[in-house]
Length: 396
Image 1 (cartoon, rainbow, N blue to C red):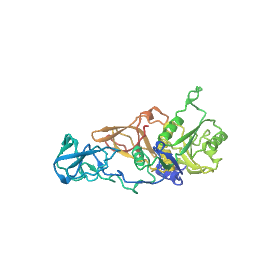
Image 2 (cartoon, one colour; image 1 turned 90 degrees about the vertical axis):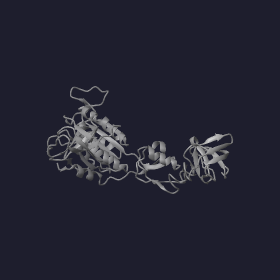
Image 3 (cartoon, rainbow, N blue to C red; image 1 turned 120 degrees about the vertical axis):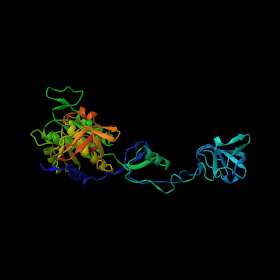
Image 4 (cartoon, rainbow, N blue to C red; image 1 turned 60 degrees about the vertical axis):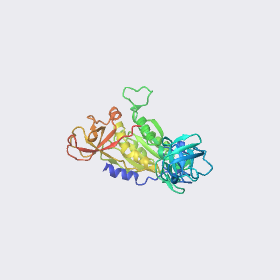
């Protein structure tokens, strides 16, 4: 099989992926979704000049001295009159600044005596928020393509929006093959193990914002695998297991029966060399992942997560960070190696420690890891303290 580098394989997978269509959602359901429209301000924010402190609204050019109290301005209940010479209005944080006033004396600096108050001199604009300070009517507050987090949702709400148009979530179908795996609470036979791969992949996908449909218990028969893929539906099909070319690896052949246009035959990566990708005859992309959990999870981070991001209109290339090695690493072989590692913060910045056992069947190691450490093909040994690239893992 033709081996492709990780970058080349990812580029081939993403080359024909297009963003999914929009759907309108209430703000309460839009967290994590990608905007499919610009959010424009329909009015100034704040819509009126207001006080940033509790205190007294005054005219700055009156200087220090005693003021006659006219009334009060509270949030949601402004003062209707006008502040003239020698006058003041009791005001509270967020309340509209009365006409005629141009400054606020904070309450700690004033002394009230019945219907009057003594205030110090202030400058114009002191403790005042001008109308439109946050944004002005017609301004583009959020651009199409941004992902909505809690702060951006708040900005949508401040613009008077209760619903937004977003890219609909990707529906990903996981087809888990292999008669050697069973899902709890089923009792495994003498030659079987519990399925840890498909539950893990489902959780990863949901963490990334996708919706998931799982097809499990697919027998090692070409027609069974073919029918499972054909009936799985979704915007993207992910197969788990059977990705290689052994006698019992049937996914490629079964997908070939469905018109698979193979774009990536194999990847020069460790773990996960058998990973492949193509387009089914019905127009759905298919990503074939190895059955070993670590191989599947590493390649899910490298390829599946970018595919979901592209479908949902987000940046698709993983962002790496730098860290310093805790311990030495041997020279790397001919394939790019993504090692499970533990990150920590030290006096000289972030550090990374690769786990000693990197076997592709180990689930427990992944449960303790919080990053993948990247080693390029053929690089020499590294000593403790040298800088490496790491891909942080999303931990829920």
